Image 1: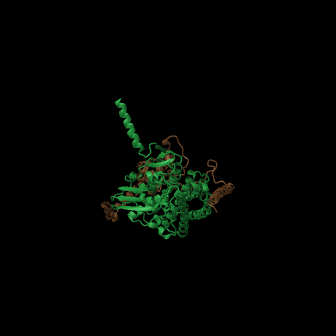
Image 2 (image 1 turned 60 degrees about the vertical axis):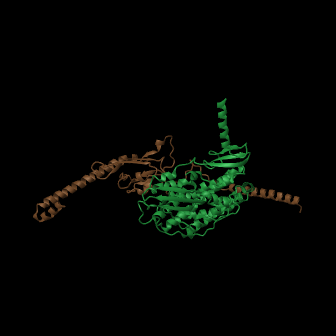
Length: 386
Length: 197
């Protein structure tokens, strides 16, 4: 029958198109978007030969909220609450980055005290993000205990930040020119106490996790992102530094007052999941160092300019401003047409580039490794989709 | 040492090392077993809300007037990124200033950014301390902020009207007094100038 032959041909063509693999018996596995081990709504289409991964297609867009489009329909101030919702785990860094970008565009002077508070809050936020990653990553690869310890410490940070900002996760603390609330001595005392506490806890984390034979077995040599892949895909943040490239926006293009603090940029050479783990834990220590210095040096004074502007109308032009978020380089590209409403705001988010490197990393690994590898690059899906 | 014995030793070292790392972890767990639990038993023990806790907005009740001071300037409505504030205002009879007659906030849309509080010219907006709102319907989150002010507002308006009327009466009395003075020849020039103004 001609019709059947035709139908058969179509299905065969579709099949070969879908397969597109060297082996005839390729198995397709949808990992996600609702998979307990996938963070958020990431979908990975795995092309499998048994347990071995031949190819991988990351499918994104499930958490798309059109933040960039929203920016084109509201004035500069009204975009503020959106920023911390792009990456909800380092919302403070994103919120303040947007403030700094607009301040740079409008040449607004920020008072010294506000700059110091910004550094303290950003670094606290970075630690809380790394602690959450630490907990959930280990949860992914089967360790439940560290998660509870990490969240206990993270809770301290959330409480400290909640006291000044009024929010626990999606902060809207920054304003153009300063901040909404001043901090008091209690905040500084709490921060000092937290630095001391976490310093005491870190050796415990190392004893519990870093030396653990099961953990090392699952991470050592797994998911190597080497320097070439990292540079080709624009991988930034701890993933890049784990590949041996000491690039940190805070040092490379210092913003705010980061040039005043002493801190190291931890790097590792092997580029595997274990290296990324080590870099992040070392970064927690460096953030503690920065916080310690900032708390010691914080001056008195106002937290907003004497005469804050009411209307924000940058001259026509464009600006790119980048900060180091917990996941890598977060860039804001603003195009102004001279009106109160931005013509375009483009957000360069680190997780997007870091995830983009996965098709170069995952092939020839196994499904079990996928969990460890994708977990170790620390993606935040709403940040990828925006 | 032959290759076989070396392999055997390595294997033994790995096994013992692994065993040690597991015991090290268990020791930490054991130590933490005797720590005070950090879990808060929420409904039984409620943690204190933080100093700057942000929640749905509310109107400030001023000591002097015992009511809010929303003049329906609509600045918060315009700045709200979530478009969740709806206000209607009107000039009450006998008064020159506008007052809010309707003030609705849809907390389900609010993102507690605080921009409305920043722009308020009369500082009559604040964060409420509501944190445990639960509902089956979305409209349950649309708060009418003026409900608790209805009685106070009536009293305030009555008082304001009386004050305005008294002011007006005083003004008229002063004008009448001036008119009486006008009959005196000495003040004639001055009053003429006033009339010209």
